[in-house]
Amino acid sequence: MTDSTNRIAEIVKNNDVVLFMKGTALFPQCGFSSRAVAILDRLRVSYETVDVLQDPEVRQGIKEYSDWPTIPQLYVKGEFVGGSDIMMEMFESGELQELLGAEA
Amino acid sequence: MPMSASEIERLIKASIPDAEVTIRDLAGDGDHYAARVVSRSFTGMSRIRQHQAVYSALGGRVGGELHALQLETAVPETETNSD
Image 1 (tube, each protein chain N blue to C red):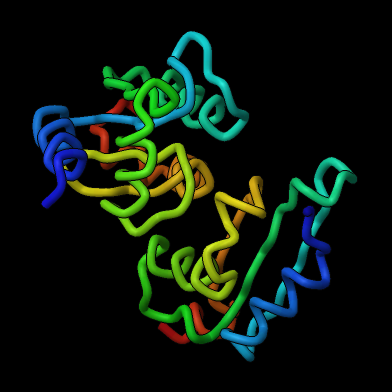
Image 2: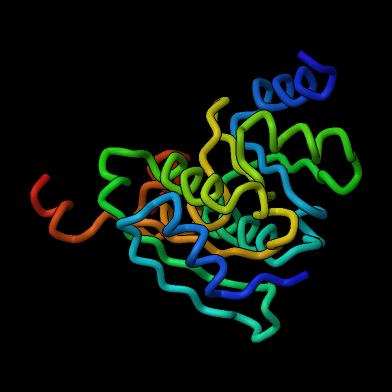
C-alpha cells in the first residue's frame, strides 16, 4: 500500500461519514461537490470533509482507492457509497436517510 | 477537447450493446452532459457497479477529458417488475 492509500484508509476508518470533495463544505469548488454537501446538510447529519484540492496525493489516491474516477465521493462507516449522482438517487428514494440514520 | 454526445453514446454501446442511452448536453458547451443508461446487463448489480460499468465503457475519460457527466443508470422496467 502506498502512503496515500494508508492515509485514505485511516480517514475512512476514523470518520463515520466522510465526503472527499473539491473545496470545503462552506465553499465548494465544483457543482457536484456542492450538490453532495447540500444533500448532507439537508439530512442534518454530522460529517467530515476532505478537500482534495489541498492534497494532490489524496486527489489521485482516492480515485484508485474506490476505483471511481470522479470527486465527490461519500464514505459511510468505511464503505464507499458513491458520487453525487448516487447520493441524489439515494436521497430521493430515502435510502440515504436510512443509511445515515437521519430523520426522514 | 470536448466530446460529442454521439461519441459518448457510441462508446457506451460498444461495451454495453443493449444499452438504451439518453444524453443531454447540459450547458450547450459540449463539456457538461447528463446521461441515462438503461441496460438489462445491470440487473443484480449495485448502483456503484452499474456506474463503474459505464465509466469503464468510457475508458478512463470520465474525470479527465470528460469533466462533467451526470449519470443515472437503471435496468429496464420489465426486468424490475419481474423481480
